[in-house]
Image (cartoon, rainbow over all chains, first blue to last red; front, side):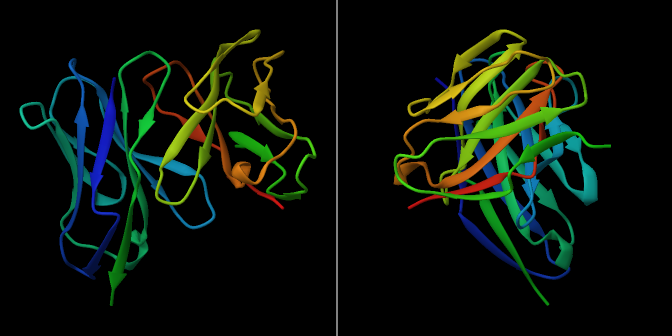
Length: 112
Length: 112
């Protein structure tokens, strides 16, 4: 069985501060890992993904994530938050060929 | 570029009524999915399809049915609507499993 845990349902950061969203997964085999972002009243869009190869993955809008197998983690970071980063973020894991399992989501608020 | 299109965007149903949520994609993707999103719960897979004529249950299939007669369309049928089916429903598609999934804008359904 696979599961995804996102630590913290809400994160509040100041504009210009570091954004750190935590994601841990449980799996006995290396998974494919994804981060999606959802803006209000919209669908999800892909921020970045890890399949194989380099463990530091860069995505859109200045986000990046690092796959750490020893810690079963895939934390998402952005060095400097912008007001437009306010959204809900989902970590997702895929082991099998067809299913994505999603975490519960983390809502990011950016303070001016 | 249309991508994944869902209709309707909003709907209010009375208990016991039935309806079909429509989903179509123009990317020639083989894989299509239906998810429901509830606050604090992330996204749960209802049904998925790996190609025309092939469908299978996800994590929460009870109360729903699907069909896949063409590559483009993947409608979700609710029979005998119940308040527990109040949710936001997302359709998604991907070229194959473990690749990026593209999401529709969602259908917000309320059962009263």
